[in-house]
Length: 197
Image (cartoon, rainbow, N blue to C red; front, side, top):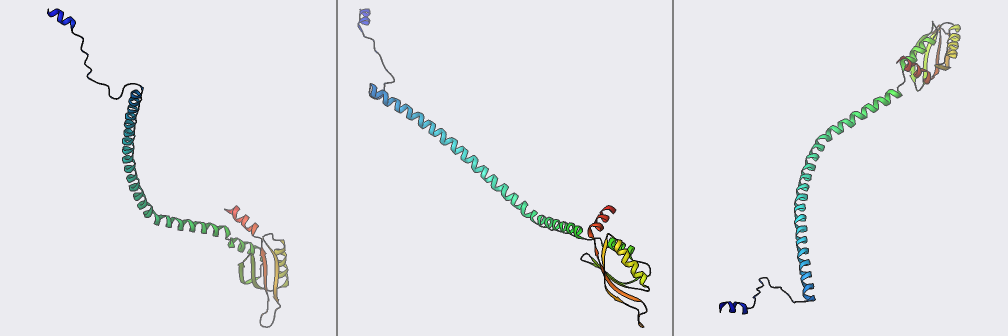
């Protein structure tokens, strides 16, 4: 009898996870929308966490950068005095170079001038300025004056002798006196000074 009862009982099916939502196509669409929404929420939360971590890192980098800028500003301000001194020294060096380039070797002019001056002529004054030699002196005979004119005429370094004043002997002064000027050919003098260096 027991066996017969077992055969007549129907199979019981228990669904522990019942389906939620309405059945059919509408239910499937709702299920798809809910699943997609869950994935979107998870992706948004991951992006928010990444942005949060990145924001913390960027904030830390910003603070480090501010600290470095502060340290470098201190170094720059401490080196400001050095820069001022360096610029002053550089300016002085440039000034020396300019003066050295513009400076005319007067000693070479004097040497050349003395070579042109005949014996017996006594100099009273000698001035070198603006490419000219201005001088005055005395001599005892006219032949010395002719020698002076001839030597300046042959020279290629000091040329264009111009006697601006010539006084004959008198009772007070028994010798000839004169004042003259000549032009310095600076290119030849500079070339000679460069050769000597």
